[in-house]
Length: 328
Ligand SMILES: NC(=O)C1=CN([C@@H]2O[C@H](COP(=O)(O)OP(=O)(O)OC[C@H]3O[C@@H](n4cnc5c(N)ncnc54)[C@H](OP(=O)(O)O)[C@@H]3O)[C@@H](O)[C@H]2O)C=CC1
Ligand SMILES: CC[C@](O)(C(C)=O)C(=O)O
Ligand SMILES: [Mg+2]
Ligand SMILES: [Mg+2]
Image 1 (cartoon, rainbow, N blue to C red):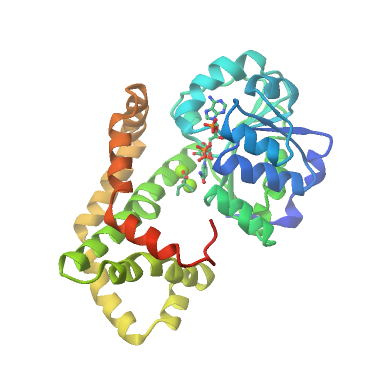
Image 2: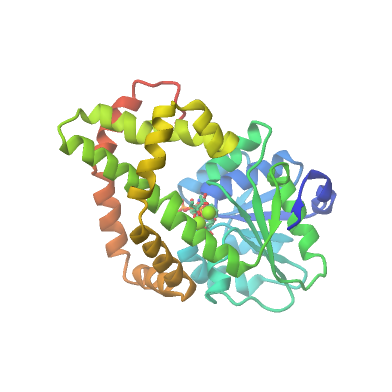
């Protein structure tokens, strides 16, 4: 599989073009600022409110999504997935015109057919494989977050070259860019965030914390052990794989880990992972998420509140308040 790096991408292709970043949230603020620092002309399409104020403070020209759509050559659609279809119908579709590129950072709405764009525009995916705030932080430190590219429609005949130039603008060609399809990105991204990165890790942390606290250990120790140190261990894995973690940790931890790991991630866990993947592939998760939003998000909001109230959050907040070196 070919990986694309700095010398493969031509940033000049974006010079003389206007990129509209629609939505100035986690991905929006980072991609917009990285592109601008790479010499690309960027405008922001955003409804009035906190995000619009922030974009203005950051020195961008801010306008409505509809206005930005009329002006820009490339539209990077960075509104929340669950709001994209409505905003597309009302504020983008009426103004879309031949020669434009509609870009996504997640394939959800194209893959699950919530948005069906006209044939005469390019439709591409540039999906950074990392949280928005890190897309900016790593770029500022001189690096980049890997990205995936996919082409859904290539009306111009140059969709790929433009998408690749865009990945260079946000810093991704420093880390590596890989070609995929909207289907593969959507299914793997949903699986990764549910089973491993967000759902899996968060529940592993909470279960470890609860096990220690229920057994009578101090919550502060349980927090340091099962939550705070996760970042420090993952940093080693990020830098040099599992072997670098094993190099740095004690042999006692390595031996204990080899024996305990399969008792925690059991055949049952693997079966549950396959079940999650199957629901994602069949569109069951997408249907549930769309219906949940149509109903006003009752279950999502209840779970969000329940998680925010977990004792690990309170202990963590108090301990972090004494660690002035941790960024806000
Ligand atoms: N978060 C991440 O790290 C990643 C996200 N992605 C994808 O990127 C896309 C954006 O996600 P994310 O950055 O998390 O989104 P956020 O929720 O962080 O930001 C969304 C932005 O859209 C704005 N917005 C919401 N509704 C409207 C509207 N009706 N009109 C105009 N602006 C609106 C919000 O502004 P307001 O303050 O007014 O609500 C906010 O600035 C999604 O497709 C997501 O899957 C992909 C990779 C990683
Ligand atoms: C892991 C969650 C993510 O997929 C991401 C940051 O990559 C997201 O949707 O935010
Ligand atoms: Mg992701
Ligand atoms: Mg995601």
